[in-house]
Image 1 (cartoon, rainbow over the protein chains, first blue to last red):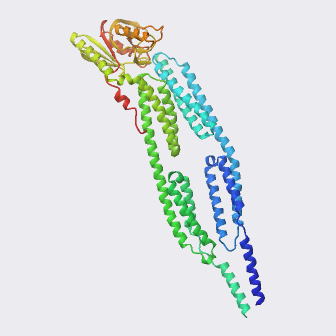
Image 2: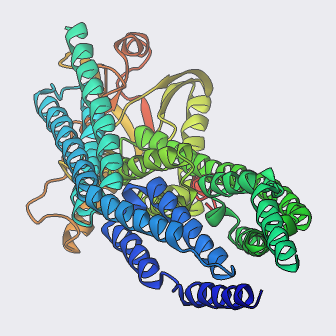
Image 3: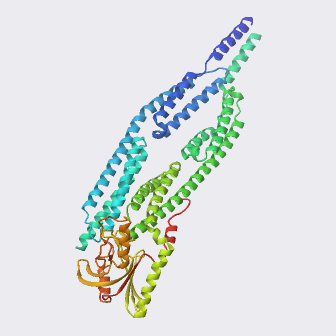
Length: 198
Length: 366
């Protein structure tokens, strides 16, 4: 009995020693946070908002797990560490995907810009060819003024691209293309109108 | 014996600890997690930031309570209070999501209405540019406003309301520039004294037609009409077309403006390059005095001449003349036999003030 009591006390002492000495994975928490911050800095909030939100949720779950364990008598941070390591890895992986996403958005903006330019050039060429006689002169003058406005707006597409607002640039370019195409169609209609009168 | 009892008690405890089922974590915990995600996706951080912050704080406190229970030995865990808290949070979340949706609906409605008002202004200005044959810089600014307006429509469709306000301000700026350009042209038409002079000229012309029993022609530039009077009675009203600067009073050759004043038909041309034409006696004495004064003051190019050959002619009313009054060929067919050499032609800017027209353009609060 004496021996049993001794062993029991010793056992409790050893367990207490190990459990209270289990350290919180603060380094892993910091590393995971840093990975998320790096992904955010890279542009994840713009190009991968959903993934970034999930990552933040995962981090929160890991921190909750740390908090749970810290309140336990027998602290086991193994699961929390695994979770944090995964968050860090996912953060790094997310960061790595951003340049490609950014590049894709940039390419889409440049493509939209090229298409808008082509549509503007076509409209301008058609206007130059259009017979500016009586019956169409007023329409053509109006369309030339419209086109001048579109060209001024077109310059803003490059400004948006330069400031890395690729989605804004794409939207503006698409709108300009749409308007220039309408002008082209109107010029064609004006030309047809003249042909019809002849 | 005592040792055996203690060992047995120890093993019973270990057995209980390993076999006793802990109460399950309330399902509301998972529901709250998914609800928080839904709120984030719906845009709660943007559209109901304060309430969302309060919701997150409640969630954090409830989570702490949950953790507290989770750290207890499993047979001491009690999730009743935790569950109650989560039920309250879920209700709070439901209210919040409704609030977010209502806010989005309200913003969508508000921005759509503002955009509608701006587009209405654009339509009015565009209609005026067509009426006046006035393009740059009015139309240039309108085209720029239309581009931004289309972008704004897309933003409304994608529920990106936070980016909308600056876009609408930009549209307003372009419209204002277009309006200012328009006002500078139309200012004369909103001047009551000037409009009164035009009215007097029109009334005198009609009175003369009545008194002498003659035919008279009244051209109204802003209304784009030409009215034929016989013995002071209105016979017919026709649509007309003017030049690029048709609303301006003609001052010199090549200004593409249409003269204003009292003239007479001096020649009828049945073989005009514009179908048929009625030549008027521009410049009259008043025009010559005005031209000389403008030249003296250096208001017109030194080498400019006063010009002439202002006609009412066929060819259609949808084109730009160089200062003449254009009508459809069918109209020329009708008026040509009715109008003799010597017929009075009064050309006025407008018989009504353009004040209303201009006031209608500026819509405050857009």
